[in-house]
Length: 113
Image 1 (cartoon, one colour):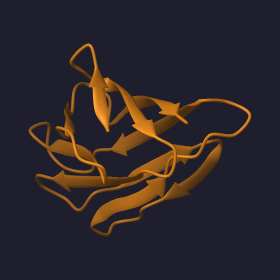
Image 2: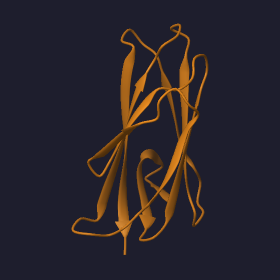
Image 3: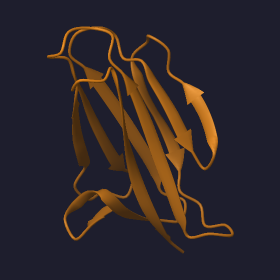
């Protein structure tokens, strides 16, 4: 996996590459809704993380959306890291609670055949 133009949210990976997502939270256990290729799931109040495989299909792009729910104080923060099985620097993001208890971020992947 590689960052495009040094952007942690604009990435490229090879067909078949496994992407590992790790999410840590300060404060309360993570509560995250995930959306990958239109399939959604909820991590629940458990340690969050997962893997998915990049595949070329009818499109050569994949979007991973993460919706974070903050349950604790305003100082709570989520730390997100994505890494690829074929190497390259990890992509990282820090999501801090602001006025609303819910925030979302996205990661876009260009899939190289």
